Image 1: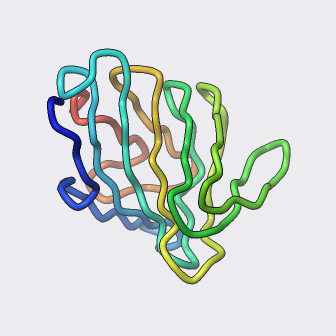
Image 2: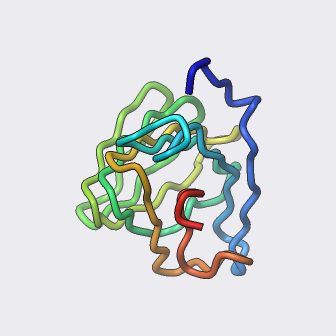
Image 3: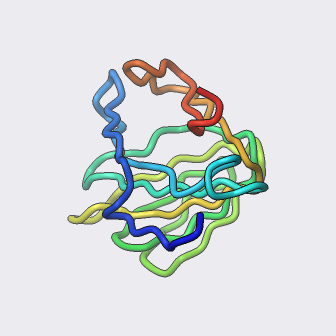
Length: 138
């Protein structure tokens, strides 16, 4: 990636789980062979009252909360999150985000690998099933 990208320039996908409880829109800034060699960067937003969905990732993820508020749901306990917060999630750690505010919960996720898969434990996504992944794994 030679020039900086803006969220407004991303090709965003809208995903709503078959249950309707989890929903998010997101797109990739970079991933292996597309603007990055050793990492993956994703933007996603969870609408008010919705969850991201309980899942694990195949790479460590650092989440930066751009805007909104909510809770991160972890096996060790839930924690409030808000704009400016940073969360580090080790590879394979089960997590979920729920938007408790009245605006989108907006997040940039930085993965420590050039490709990544998300394995959803409860949600089923139309067209994706129970696994979503970076475009270089399609």
